[in-house]
View (cartoon, rainbow, N blue to C red):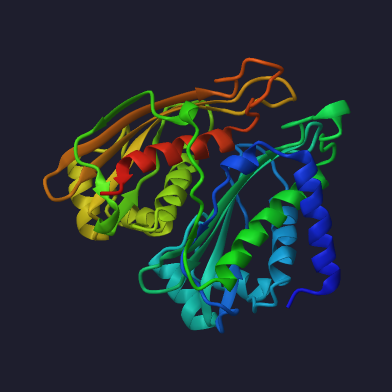
Length: 375
């Protein structure tokens, strides 16, 4: 039970968020598969934060702040010393996902039922502060599953408002708002018996510019999809993995698609010595669908994933997607998506996007909704 002090603190933070009225809030989507109405009886593990920024970021401090948020739910966590001991003894070097080896180790040696994976996409503490982060909860079953996933992208100057009253000038305040939103999303998963999926519409400006869709999935199919890291042809390091996370989150949000945990995908690709130098081939699809038991493989190429470093500049996201089906080795969906933060902006920067994370989330959601359609 969260204390009254924490309750009133949350109310104050939410009031601040409403005053700021960040545009990313409208596009934000929580991914919350069915969970337990009370705190689960098993223990949780919080992995160290994976740095996707391509530069220095205070991941240790960020991880501690995120853990403090999670501890408000009074669920049981494995001690950091125990976590580091298991990671070291089993030589588990990857903290970007959960594979069968790490799942078994934490399940059998620490009694863990699920692992938190946190990926920091963007960090800037100078004015205007900026932050983008992914978080997901993965089970420690023999075949790990994604139980919950969400992402947040914020900038202090998203909506200055009248007399700049909406500006967030210090990074600590922005981080608190972002972590509060992630914690609330996880709390919804923890407290609700049913899947909660946002039904907000996708903005037209984020729709694919070009699209081929021969045979979209239907909501009743309950398909399994392996999303591989998109081939990175951009200047941004690890942008292929960033887009992989966006697509996994949006596929999970449909409720009718089961994306495979990226840690499992990585494990099987390494075991098969699979190297996709310039994208995925039909042979790669055959191997992946066989070893992962997936019905579809989603891949693509990232041509640009740019986040401006300072208060000026315009984010750019440009990528293609390719969906191949196992049964007949056919390409059933192709698309080309490209957006700038100023798209659709005509007066006084109203609607301008300052975060590549928010743009990429909307663009991935639009692609997924074209892939998965109701009958």
